[in-house]
Structure formats: C-alpha cells, structure tokens
Image (cartoon, rainbow, N blue to C red; front, side, top):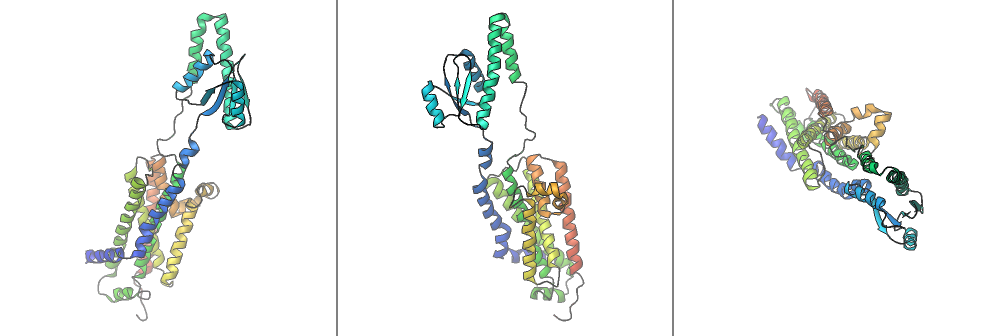
Length: 376
C-alpha cells in the first residue's frame, strides 16, 4: 500500500501545471535571463587589452626593440605600439587613438593627455625602462665583458615573480547568481510540502477529510507523500542543474556530481520547510501559500539573488543570518565546490541542510499526527 500511495501522489502532482511552472519552468526561464544579462561580463571586466601607444624618434633603438620583443615573447602583451612621426603621434593622442607618446630621441620620454590607469602603467614602464637602459649603456661603455651577465640578471629579475591562482575553480563572481537561483528553485519545493500538510488535514481539503476517516495508518500515507515530494523535487533539481550546466554552460567547477547531490538535498530542505508551514492548521491554504512564497523570496534576497554582495554584507554585520538562512546554506554548499572544491566546508553545509530538513519534518509530523475534529 505504501507504493500505491507513493505512485498516486506522484501521478497527481505531475499533472499540476502550476506546480511544474514554479518548480521547474520558472527557474529555467529566469536562468536564461541571467545568462543574457551576466554572460561575458566577467571576461569584459577582467580582460586586459594592450595599451595603444605611439613611438617616435629613433625607430632603430636596439634596446627598446629588444625589451618590447621580450615582453611579447613572454606573453606580457602590454603595449600596442605604432611607430610614426611626431606630428602624426600628436594627432593620434588628440583623437584618443593612443594613450601616450614615447619619444626615443636622446633617451626616453613620455607624453600623455590625461591621468588614468593606463597612463600610470605607461609611466611605470618608461621609468623602469630608463633605469635598465642607463645600466646597460654604462656597462657596455665601462665593462663590455660583463654586459651579457647584466642582461641575463635583468631578464631573471622579470621572471622572479610568478602569478599563481589561489584556486582552479570558477572565479566569475556573477556565477553566484546561478547558485542562488538553484537555492530558490530548491526552496520552491515548499509548494509540494504545503500540499502534503493541506491534503492531510480534514478542515482544509476534501482529500484530507477522506484520509482522516480512512482505515489506513496515517503515518504510512504521510510518509508516502513526503517521499513522493522528495522524488519529484529531486527530479526538478536535476533538470535545473543540468540545464544550467549543459545548455547555459554555467561553470560549476570540477565537482558537478556533488553539485547535483547538494541541490537534491536542498530540494528536500525546501519540501520539509513547506511541510512544516502547511501543517499549521489554523491558517488557510492561500495564506500558507503567500507565507511560503514570501519567506522563500526574502531568504533568497538575503542570500544575494537580487543584490550580489548581500551575503558578504551580512557575513560582516550579522554572520548568524547566513548560518540560519536556508537559501544561503544551499548556495554556499555549491559555491564552495565551484570555487575551491572544498569538501570540508561542503560537508558542513551538507550536514546543516540535513539537520534543517529533519527539524522541519519533525515539526510537520508533530503538528499533523493525532489531530481530531469536532466534525468533518
């Protein structure tokens, strides 16, 4: 009989178009809008284009040529150089086609039209080049035999600092919106949980009245409904994560199987929370629905779905909020996998989700069991 109840719970709720819209279609559509809004923004913000600069004077300056060639060979594509005459260079600077003019006659000098980041980088480059140029020329004049060693030491100085990423995961800060979108989809499982509470109370639905007079054990029907809701919500979460990962090409890092597991457990948390809310008998179904949606969206707001840095603000001002917020816990479990592959933190968040689900389920069962009615 347990399997019979489980089968019919799934069949009934699969046909509920309103539920399927909120549980699956709405998160997918919202994910498409997120992709259109945020796709490529991170690359645009972090990409460093070569600085356009005009070079005038001695175009056969061997030292300058060797330095720029060495930068190109090392992959440090800093300058986009245009060799030209002084008048053309001035016209280019005036029309903002270049950020500065480097003059090589009688040494090196720089002329810029404004003070910005790129102009500052040019100034630093010219200053360092002047030092190295003087050192090389003085060495060639006074100790030609040591010139090779000096050049080698200067080249080694460029190589002493190596850039190394602290993580091999996805550092795109806009991806956290998709993490929070998964958390929202998981908490929408509360709609299934609400139905469980409503459909097991005789004063709220005709089906609840039938179940209350049924000779079948109430615990068996309740357990079948909860398991059926877990199965449906897990399927919705698998579809949601798969759509984001393989259609929208959201980078979840190298731990995608654990992302599926975390999302599924987050869906269980959403169902359990809805079950607890739905088991409060004195509230009507419409009030419970409104309360569930309001709580879900507020939790997602605090986790950063609407304001990206909200979670960071709360971590600084009130860190306990992130620990108690189900949406923040779900998104954090995925975030630590996508960015760091941190299994320790993942297990902590995973355990927290299991504990919250158990608490909500216990509350729902205690509010539902052994309820008596004056009349049905």
